[in-house]
Length: 86
Image (tube, rainbow, N blue to C red):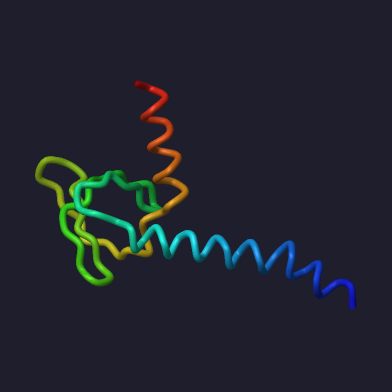
């Protein structure tokens, strides 16, 4: 009986919180933001559609990706590393 609440507190609850944070991040995406995908591609948002984001990775390189493939954690790490370099 004690195992169920412990399982919830240490496994299920943190995952649900992480999913909510990612969903909020996906909804807050705006044109011009620099983001990092889960595969490590860095680019600037060029156009937003319902579930698709167009990012510019280089001067003439545009990629069409899903919103879910943009990683909140990797984007935050990239931004903090950029700030440290300045």
